[in-house]
Each structure stands twice: as structure tokens, then as C-alpha cells.
Image (cartoon, rainbow, N blue to C red):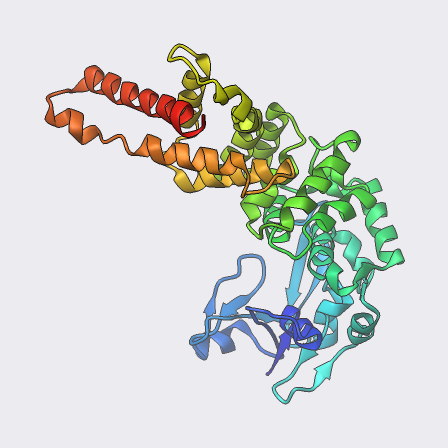
Length: 383
């Protein structure tokens, strides 16, 4: 039995790039041998085991055979006769098909080190075409390593395009699409994830709501906001911003995005004009009457966005709109809303409860005082 470090950890060590996980492959062993040593089996489709102490994943060396469309259409074969080279051959990219033994010796049968030197993302073999998830993975690796000068090899782009033409990407399931997208949104240049999908023709299958006319704006928005934040939720919302509200809801529902992603993306689209157009010193310079509808709209906006209860999300909403409109957080819009929220929060319901108000009457008093605070801020502080 021999154990090798494989995949991303080996690649990133060679690149002097930070990594947080290690994966291992075990050659010449049986499941029973690993279990006897205390490893815990966790794999459903093929034997993967957790180390008894480190809890890192150890997979038996395996080969695979395509039996049906999509990424689930495989039969895996594990046996003590499966070699390390055979296991590495089933991997997606040459830079991910390098193994290292416990003496630091590298096994690199598919010239992954050469492609690292040449900054190439290249498929290991034609078996790449059997799994459409690999198109998403190569897009994600481009998002991770583009800033280091990596590009997709011409033959690999050609192969990915042929997979799209063959209809393989139509078999991608939403769960896997979102898993890879969420990872890509955390990478150095997430826009290249979408750019590669566009180049190979997969975008319309994966993100059907993003048509050709909207694509450039979606990518430009994502690029702009990614310079400001590494938050995947804020980056996702920026990518969605060029879509209409219904398209955003449709895409989030179809992909099964977490609720916080879909909620913030929808709010950003719905209230961007409210955030920007409400703040106008010329309008406020003459003061507003208590009957002016702007005060009511501000109150409605703060309620609709749960600004008090979800202050962090409200601040994200403000920042996103300001970034997307190429404005500064030091500008009037950001300070206006933060100050206004603070005044709004200062209304203490306990005061009215102590005076005996309950139910609807209590709600009316709280509402009245909040309206007064909005009015006072606009008329006194901003005039």
C-alpha cells in the first residue's frame, strides 16, 4: 500500500500559492485494509475514507467508465491493481494530475509541471469530455489563476466547445452549477468564470437568463465590484444587477441559491433608484413639509428592507448600489442613509410601552415618531 498527496495541494505548492486542503490517493489497498487502520468510509459512489486523526480525505486509486449522459453517468472501478498513473489519468487538468510521495518525489505522467511553467490549463485526456462539470471547473481555475498569467489551452477550449455542441452541459444539475459558481465567486478574478463559459458556448445552458445583450454589462459590473470586495454574495449581486427583477428571481430559484443571495440581489435591483434619487441636497435645501411623500417613501423603504433588523444586509445594499453607480462610500448617499438609519433606530418602543400603549396604538406611536425623526433630519440637518 502506498499513499500519495495529489491534486490541488501539489499544484499549489509548485505555484507557491496558498492552499487549505490536502487530498490523498491510496494505491494497492482494499477498503477492508483502510477500515482496519481506523479510516472511516464516507464515499457513496466510490471508496473515500477519512483519516482517523486529520480527517483528510483518502481515496482508493480508481478508474472510471462513462455509461450515461451527465456527470453522474459513470461506473467506478477500484482494485489493488489500479496504478497511480491510471488514477491520475482520469483527472481533469494536467496541473491537477501530479502526485507526491512521502519523500517529496513527484509523479507527473502528463506534464503538469510543464503546463504550470507555460501557464496553461490543459485537459489530461479525451476523458475530460465525459463529465460536463469539468467545464465549470476549468472556468473556476481560470478565475483563480488568470492573474498569474494562466490561459486555457486552445485544444482544451475546442474540446469544451464540442462538449457544449454535443449537449453535455444540458445535463448539468443546478446543485453542481451553484457549487462551482459559489467557489468561483471567491476567486481572484471571478469574471473569468463567466467569460470562459461564454467563450465555449456553455453560458446559455448554465445561466439561461443572461443573454448576449446583457452579458458584457453583467461581467463589467462583477469586475468593478470585485475590486472592492471579496464577498461572494456581493459579487453575485453585482453580476445579477443588469438583469430585471423577474430574471433574477428565476435564476436564483432555478439554481437553488441560498436565500441571502437571492434576497440581496433582488433588493439591489429593486431599490437602487430609491437609494440614489432620494438624496438630493437641492430638493432638501428648502425643506420638506410633513405631507411630502418623500418622507413616507423613505419610511417604506427602511421597512421593506428590514433596515433595523438586518443592518448588515442594509449596509451591503448601500455599498453595492454605490459601487455599481461608480460613486464613493464617502459621498452623500452613503452617509445620508447610515445617519438616517441611526436616527430611525433611536426610537425606543419601551418608552411607549411604559406609557401604556399596546397593539395597534403602540405601532402607530412608533411609526409617528420615526416619521418625525426622518422629517427632522431632512429639514434641520440637511438644510
